[in-house]
Image (cartoon, rainbow, N blue to C red):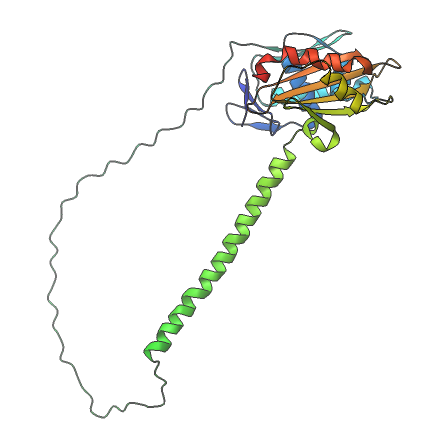
Length: 302
């Protein structure tokens, strides 16, 4: 599982788990996680509010208070985890930036050493046992054997033992099967629920060019022709890239007839990935924008 070390914290993108070196952890909700990762990608640089709204709220119309509440919640999370050298700062009338002190490192938890107890050599001691006097066996001649008591044959005894052993074994096997089924169901659910919303392929229009899978989602008021986008990309003679590219398009929150996009590219044979955002673009220029993004993603395409 991929892990990102941030000073004395560790972020696990697959589960949105943020933890410290004492293994105290918080599971970030999707929206705060998106805001935190966007700040982390551009740490040290101020991200304006418009970009945060376009990328994390996907163009939805919300108030500034919504972003303020998310930032306040993230700051409380950092305090709760006793983060060192990590701070979310407010840039007046502009936006926010994340600062990370690279000198603060993750301190390993020292596990206590188990010292085996010292056992002294114990010398065997002689024990005096008094001899037992065997009593003579007394035989009573007047004892009669009752023929009414049922006597089990050797076959019946063997069958009874098999039944005693078989019934618990079947019950144990049934319990083990139910437990395995439950564990498998939980693992499948965790894997399915851990997929970020941005990578749910069923929400996109899909096509493939030169082993590159393109996933396009249009959330704008305008209409676009997926076939036109595909033909435009094919005419540009793209570089071959063994990756998946996700493109989401939104209406601008503040400007009419203006579109924004958020892109995400991930390699098929490694964990390399990259994000891309653009506050203004036109549908006609989308093939050229994607082609430029591919040229910059050389390490991912290798």
